[in-house]
Length: 392
Image (cartoon, rainbow, N blue to C red; front, side, top):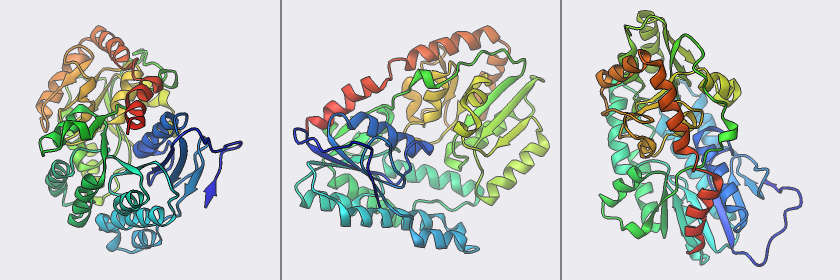
């Protein structure tokens, strides 16, 4: 199925670029990334998009959902095999794109969804770009496996998909990552500096209402997938029996897996100041999510970036992150937030207690955080990333 934006006409004086990602523009982290890519690339190329939902700003081929993945999700017990569902959906998307891809000068596909598409694009003479939103898969898979094992939760990354991603790395002429930390994981494994480009996401400061710290409650926010490798359990441990009486920990996200839901039920029974809001943050309202918070904690063990960190900073919030999150690039320890070791609830707790006792510090760090991301605009994204792609 194909959707065209009104009045869109091919520009014969520009090179053609096909952009592919199994996401709905602006929905979730991958959807935000797709949206930013469309906004960044559409004025520089004759752009065609393959996605799970239509874009208002570029001609879009909407790829239908995977029937196999949908069926697996409905079968009891089988629906817990997350690797099967993830793999079947990504493979179906890749096959669909490869089979219907038009000729183009450049093809950009999302990691895990592009093995056949990359091959097809190269056979048509296109230069290829792979968009990698996580760390190198070797590092990512190891960390995910360790954290999932703590909960008895199956990882979504099968060995077959792991090998598939490695093959995609080799087939791409250029690999885009979201942070310098992510780039390091590729350089450590023998990739050349010239093959890896860092393109940090843009943040529109007008989209984010500013935190005013007017609430008497010290409110700690976690925003994102509540998955083991995101380190949410280290934050729960840090907050349990928190000494400041007027405090709250809010998790914006759904638990999904049953062992994680049971973990939260036990945690909330012990510490009733922990609450769970399983809704999309934009549906809830960014003012509610970031505007009423005191600090955002992103304790991820492995994460290619972490959109919530940049969004919180754009809202004038200090942040607490680990070196496992690519968004650590944005944090100057003690100035606009804190950097704590991975898997260290004691360090998280110390920083939270210090912030709770120093309201003026919250405001000062929040102001510095906002200044940090002010330069991460769509214009800077185009000047950095789009200029690099145009040079291919």
